[in-house]
Image 1: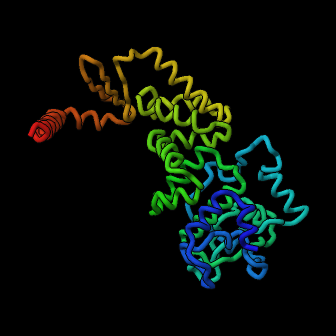
Image 2 (image 1 turned 45 degrees about the vertical axis):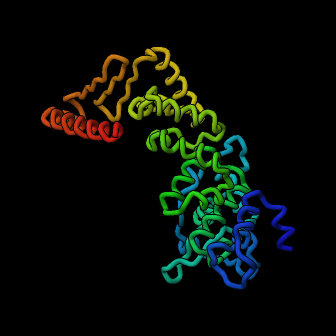
Image 3 (image 1 turned 30 degrees about the horizontal axis):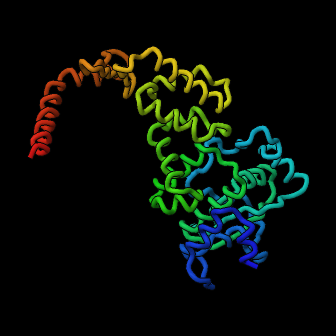
Length: 321
């Protein structure tokens, strides 16, 4: 029976199962297949007061209760809430027992949890004893089955898993990724400032090509965090996909205005670094939010340049030897 169910699930289920140890009666093994998280026995389904359940784990959505596929009304939160109110909660959420006596942690199903909380009814929950790694795999498996995380949400989810202390192998299993797939996600989170991503949102219709192009523009200096935030400030009325397009157009415009032989970058407000074939120049405004830094730099820049040059000379000497 388990094998039949395994074949019917998404690719990540197979990856999880292949990574697992031999069958065991023990619960909460890191290497155990996460199928139990989705296929728990009827005996593990309970009705629980939503107020006793806390969120757990890395966030997998940028817009907490906004459906990624916004054109599909059936995916919307209000439609979900109305469905539960009229027909009851059909699909249980997954929880595990908290370290606090009598409380639980939600592995997935936060929208269903919130709906039941607002409706004032108990939530149907599959209670499983899961360690952190298996809980993450179960969360990833459920996301893969629904296939409704956007490319950028996957990138941020992958980053959150790494920041929680898990290795790249775990990230790939959770999101069912190849090495190159994870590399594409990492490129985006490393180059697109998080504040910019927060302002853009999930961008459900913007896939890898657009996000990696955006990452390239930040990497090349055509876009900076300050410029992007200023551009997005005037694009608040747009949806998240249109915001991506707006930034891409801004980068193209800057690329046509800026000579290929000259690059301009602004690490933060008030600071500009110009690089051309002839020279590198630094400009720091002595007004605005970073005026204090400008004054400090004015007093210390000579020492900073001397120390940097000494490091350069030492490294250059070692390379020659």
